[in-house]
Image (cartoon, rainbow, N blue to C red):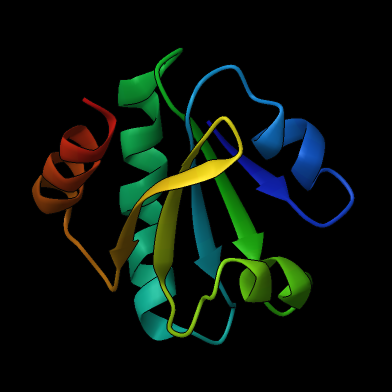
Length: 106
């Protein structure tokens, strides 16, 4: 399950999470972001209780994208205990994305 986040719920959902969180920074106008959406949602079912999947619209909460230095989207950032532990930039198909996520959270 993928949860929508914004500046109002970011702290409670991401920074205070007891498990790592992967944030999908996206925008509705971004073609590769739309291609990534079903891949991200499908993978979210494989990491129950291991990794929390959330998405953040950079048009709605640009200050959070700026805080993480997001310069291109789609960009996935893995956060653990409030700190970035990994980043995946650009579109990735399901096997590639799973491999990249596994290498970050192992």
